Length: 107
Image (cartoon, rainbow, N blue to C red):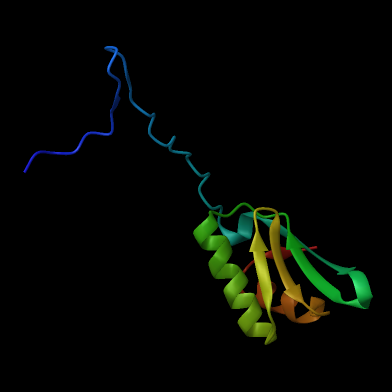
């Protein structure tokens, strides 16, 4: 069977070939001992509290794994974003203890 081409052909002798997706290289994760995480509490609308952890350099896979471990350790929900990790509720003490036990420097 013939291989299908991505080219779009026109009847007037010209053709268009869409460019492939650009590969973006992620910066590698630094070891926990070389990073300083910042833990802070913010209040959202309706008085809801969210604990934010920022200030680290991790790949997206490592950041997702850290977010999952923090949510599990605190027993709450949360999310990971390119800026950091958020955990629902006021869990600053639990997050600091968890990160310190894993070798992180926490501010």
